Image 1 (cartoon, rainbow, N blue to C red):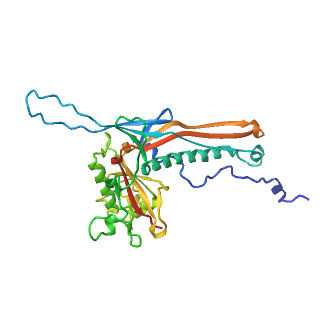
Image 2 (cartoon, one colour):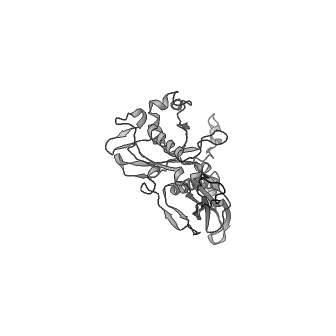
Image 3 (cartoon, one colour):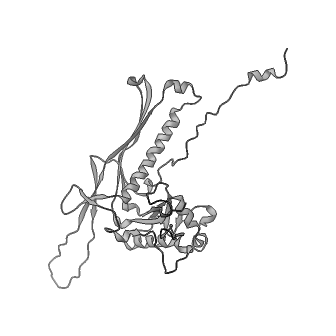
Length: 327
């Protein structure tokens, strides 16, 4: 006997074909703000540096022409291939209501982008390799530390004044004698870059000083009354919830900055730089190859590869700011 509920027999089960990726950094955030050198060749790429010269006083008529030597140095960037790949079984695809190949490829592409930024950060805080005095191999290690480059480091406890306040000096952690990213530290970094004659703006008036830091440091900075004030910040950072430009710097949020210590002693490295201070070299931009592997039951295989490297070129244009990282 028919009834009004029979129509429900013909109902279908509808499943969403949308795929939600895990929360992650999806694109490169730092690469576009450093110097880029594409189409590199060979085992290593070399970046030549020319030093300064000085004009002399001419103190006599018909004096001998001066002959001056200008320093030449060369930085080496080594090629380092990166790759990734995955299989997708045919029966897995047939048992799903969407093609998993595309989201797998998207996730892998995101991973390659993150690796570009990681390579740049590693180069900023790592050793560079240089040659001078007629050598051409770039084999001399230039170690990045506060002994070799004391002016390029801003300590974790840096503040201005004998009795610093939270308005300018950040959040204090007395247990580890460290402070978060602060206006004091930003102004110090800007002064260092300016004293080293790094151009602050490009021809279009856009800032050429950059800060790479985590959301934790931006949050700490937003607690400052000065950054909330329109007198200090014409973009009203707290209202907008961001600090894209402040104290002459453009901010880049990056959540994988190197850290030392744990708990109350956790200190995060913040990077301040001018684009000419860091160079990213590309031997091969990310490529993708997809084929069916006869040795694996003709299962489709996707392969991703890129060949990249980075180096610190001018220490005078790179600054490490050590900052307490709040929980």
